[in-house]
Image (cartoon, rainbow, N blue to C red; front, top):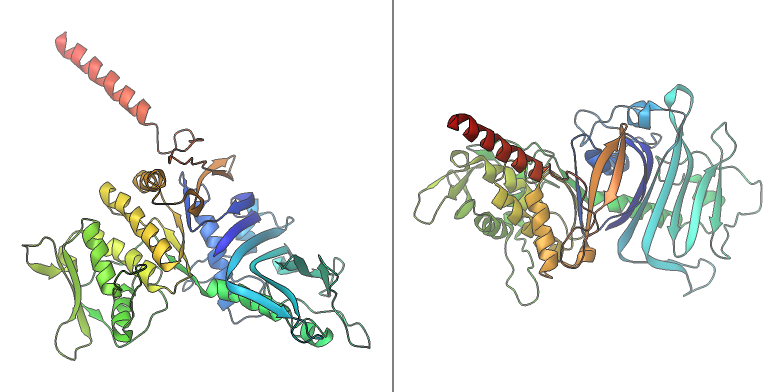
Length: 454
């Protein structure tokens, strides 16, 4: 799970310092205030991990990518290539990592379950990105790879924090070549140093972190009358939720069950999705059925109320198809995953938006997933506040932020929530100026009545 994020000179953010990330992290604020950019940074890093180009420092994306950011000039703050782009991530490992001492049997050099990564990069000739420094912090130590001088691509390896030092074999102290992507140590590291093999474990932990990161965008696919499924096992729902039905059928095929806690019966993915669609007040029942025996064509049929007839998902309100990918994603991804959601409340009635917060709380609690969402929903936020006051949700399990702009620069404010769910530093006009609207309406009504009287 991600626990901390810092970034400088990325898109509209000159700087974000030590942003705490919790199991439920909410980003609220005005349009074009930088909320989505925070998610885009994480998506860009996932694309970088998945890229086959080991020499590309960052993968900015293409039309088929999760996010398409253009070039370094496009993502640099104020399009200024003279300032470095830097970021820092902290996360908790799924299980404790132990680094054995290569020289002493049964001895552990470092151990821990917390890991942090820093990277700083600069534009070189032609705008090509160059890594200035990357480092991992683990077990109270920092292991860094830093560029030597201001020209060329020669790097040195260093460590801080303990008596540990990297050991070279006897011979000429060769310089290291450039890192792999923005986070990896080149193969020469493990040949030039006798005790550096554990750096590969730190690099692997970074890759595994982003292999467990999933995303759902704000624009969802329209529902279809028929879905074709030929046995695919999708990794996620797709940017627009287009693989939701595939995921439901794949989960059914594999016989997967979802644990709901101690001494509670396990449920299938379809059962859990149907339960929440009913709890959200959208439909009474939900099922996915083949149009004929042995057919690869499937229908999604729903029942609006207990006494109504079953109809296709295309024949009911748009909200069902819009929230379906959110539900499926929360219960389909592997436990321990991080889910990025953009406007999960889109096209939903305010009462459904409120209940959607309970879906997120349930997924975090019972599936150990982390959810980072960008939202405009006052109703979703209010439900989170209510659950904190009711002690259903631990205050420490939530981190809420307000994003705003000041002279085209994004600013991040942490919302201070007390034990009773109240926001102690509520930003001005957070969700509009409700009192000003009411006062204006009252004044207009008074003037109209006065005009009618005269």
